[in-house]
Structures are given as structure tokens and as C-alpha cells.
Image 1: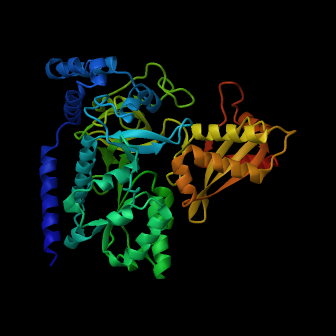
Image 2: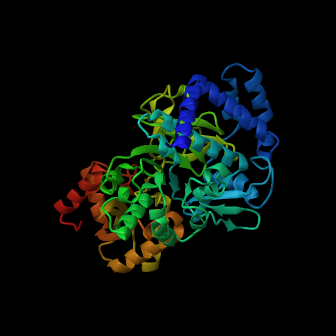
Length: 521
């Protein structure tokens, strides 16, 4: 009898009963969360400049929502470049008490802008504790899945993430958030944690996957956590290495997959071919800025925002009043608290966190599918991004790479677009690049240079090109082809811009247009 597993399951069921009884109004949770954040940070440089003491006093003694009116009046909205240039760069240089008390020891490297390969997102001790706490809650939420066997809770947890061998930059350590959090796994969880400390420290993704594959048959895995592309690639390697039919031939007790980072739907069909029986899929929203939301129950339409653990949320209606055509914020955007949002409307997400992010535009857009429960789905990005397998390729990256390549090759590129396409069981990017009719381009050279520049500009892209993003394809067209498509849509003129990313039905629409007008597609 799985005694330990039985006790764990009973503890989980009891915890869920207690948690459901103690559940408070989300607006009250958020007010209390902001109060804690302001109290901790009021003596920092940021807190003193923006009068956190006054805002905190308004929370304690003012009328119901007066504190929020003062908060958004006092503290400006920040994107990454603005908050880094004004504040975070001081912490990165080793100064203390800037946006959060003390010195920041860890920085998560996240997808960068056109100016740098990576963003540096602070990860404080308070944030590490908050992420651990929410991770434990996610495990506890399995108590809602009544048919799971007792002994499942004794199985291994395979967490496929970045290296725990962080880069030592003298005044701080930096690396993937998954590597930072794995390095700080609590001692009681270590017996269940796979792939273990040695393999987790491996920086080379190819070697890491090889080492996991070689040891896979020794583990009894019940849970997998990771980005779908990496998990699919790993399972394919294991199945091929051991010459078996499915991953369940190696891990017969595998039952739960917690995924995040990108949409799972493009992977589902190929993923499930690797299984002998269905898995429970749990959607997770863990960003470099914090553990934002996760699926808490079977059949949930969305993920529940974590409203009482180190993050205060604000919501900007994603419309032309608040964002321009490039997805950038306008001067005075409307912002709302969680009790002011509406279901089925799209919002850009602002975070104030225990890592010293304040009214920070994370760049994601969300939609509430159940306001009472605080459940959301991620709908996209404020700016066009292409992320089939975690490459997080932004329009800034694309524009910068095209500029560099066109300058080097002496081309006049006025228009371009890129489509994400399937490439076997993995993915590729298909670029359509416009040049002048009197110009000629060496397509293979253009492709090679473009791939090289994108890898230099975006760390995530460089990693995925070695694994899940198998190829890039380049089709050179005359610039007039792009204008002809715009004309066919009635969108000629200065206010209309050619989409830099084609997605969904527009990909086929674009291909049909090219074929109809005798352009190569």
C-alpha cells in the first residue's frame, strides 16, 4: 500500500477544503496584497519618490477605492525599457534599496528587445518564496482530480528547465528563471525532483536532453513540467533511444503534464501520438516577472490569477484609445482593478510585484472567462510576436534584423512578413521579403544572414533554432506584391500598414493572393 502517497492525497484534499472555505473576495485580496507591497518598499528610492507612505495611509484610512486613484495618479506606468533605464540598472550595478529592499542577487534573463539580446528581470528572495508557495498550491490543486491513485504522489516530478549553473556576474547571478527556481527547490521536495542537481546544472540543451534520455529508464515519473516543444522533443528522443512505442513504455505512471510558455494546442496532436493513455493537462502562467496564474480545477476554461501572493494586477483595455497601431501605450491609458474588469474583453496586463516591478507592462494580453473566480486566458501580446515553440520573436527583432541584412546586402526592403508553419513534427518560419524590381538577391545568402542576425538579437530564438525551430524559409518578392495585397483588402494609404506577422486564416489568404497573381508562394 502506498502509505506516503495516501497521506499526501488526504493532506491535499484537506488543504483544498480549507482553502475553499477561506476564499475571499478578489478585490479585497488585491487591496491587501498592494498594502503589503507598499509597506515593504516604502523606504526604497522608488517608494520615497512616489510617496508610498501616503498611498499606504489611504489604504488604511481612506474610502474604499481612494487608494487606487492615488496609486495610479502617483506612480507612472512602466514598460521594460523605461523601468530599467530609470531604476533597475542601479540594482544591476549592485546598489541596494532601489525598487525593493536590499540588494538583488538574482536576475532572470528574458526575451529581449532590439537593443539587447536579453532583458534583466530582478528575482528577489520574496519573489522566490512567492513562486515556491504558488507552485505548492498548484500541486495541492490536484486534490480536485478525484481519480488520481494514491501512489501517484510518490512518483517523480520531471521539471525540464534552464541550467541551475547560473552566470556569476560578480554582483549578481543571472540565468533562466526556471534555473533560478530549480536551484532553490526546498529540501523536502528534492527526493521527488528530476533530473536531479547534476543534470539540471548542464547548460548545453542538447547534452541535457541526452543525459536525461540515458537515465530515463531508472526513474518513475508521474508528473512532467515544461514548455511543450521541449517536452515533446525529449519524449521523442527517449522513445527512439529505447526503441519503444510510447513514453508510457518507459514511464507507465506518467499522468500529469503542467505546461506553459506557449499555447499547447499546436502541439496536442503530435504530442498525444507519443502517449499510450491520456494525460491530465494543467495550464500554467509563469513568467520571469512572477507566477501569475494556473489552472486550479478540472474543466476550467482558464487559469486562476494568484491574487494574494506578491502580485498586484491592473488591466488596460486593449483598444485604440490605449494602444497605437504598433501596440505601444498611448500617453494616458485607462487602467482598471480586478473588480472593474468585464468578461470576454481583452486587457493588457500591468504588474506590481515583490521583485520591485511597479505598474509594469508585461506585454501579454488576457481575457477573463470567469470574473468571479478570477480565471483568464492569454490572448496574445500587445505587439505582434511569433512564438511557435518559445522563440518569442518580436517585431522589434524582425525589423532590426531586416535592417541589418538589407544594409549588408545593399537591398531596399520596404515590406516583409513572416508566417509560422509546421515542419514535420516541429516548426519553421517562412519569410516573405520585398525588394525593388530592379534589384536581385542571393536568396540563400539572405536566409543565412537573416538567421544569424535574429540569433544575435534574441537568445530564445538562437536556442530554438538548434532544436524545435527546424528551419527558416525565405521567399523574395517585389515590393509591389505587398502593396497589391493591401489594395485587394481596401487598405491602401498611410494609416494602413502591412502585417509583420501573418497568423491563422491570413496565412492561407496571403498564399492564395500570391498564387492568383503568379507570385511564388
